[in-house]
Amino acid sequence: MEAITYLDRKTLIRLMHTDLERKRRSRERGPVYNALFRDAVQVIAETLDYPCAERLQPALLPTARHLARDGELRLTPRLEQLLGQVSISTLKRTLARISQDRPRLRRRPPQSPGLAQNIPMLRLPWDEQRPGSLEGDLVHHCGSTTAGDYVHTLLLVDIATGWCEPVAILGRSFLVVRDAFLRVLSRLPFPIRTLHFDNGSEFLNHHLLRCQGLPVLQIEPYRPG
Image (cartoon, rainbow, N blue to C red):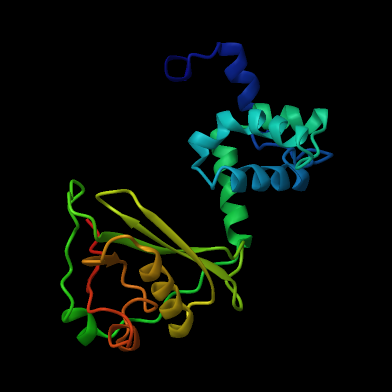
């Protein structure tokens, strides 16, 4: 036993004549990282767009002090100490608990395979020289929940010129998306040759493709990779 454990002979004799089971504490220690700490981490993580724990940990204390100066976070000396000493493993567990309480975005309904098959799925070249090839997407201004109607921004960016056309719309119905496209067409100084979107149903639908007033456009859904 001495050769294996590297313990002194007298120590081994004493351990052999005692109970080796760990005794319970007479008074259990309370949680160090309490609800106030989790609330502060949630505010900081949301401010920084939820980075991973490895990137968030060194930014916790500087961001907390910045938010406290702007009145967005109440920073006490104890909270400041916890934010400065928290380990990455503890922060990972805190972020996992926070993510369980966050509302999840609803998934889009599956797209009709027949419609997607009739539209080419290509990537637009980044060095496009002619104006008229636009990348587009919707920006959601919904906060932490997607329930009900809320404001979106339809954003179209021309690859060659960098021309940007943002249009605010309420909801994602065919009527508001169509009206947004018509507004963009009335303001653009060049014709649209190609529109490049993701596979969202607000763009890939029969109503928008055959809409009167819109020119015949080559719409190319985004292909990942």
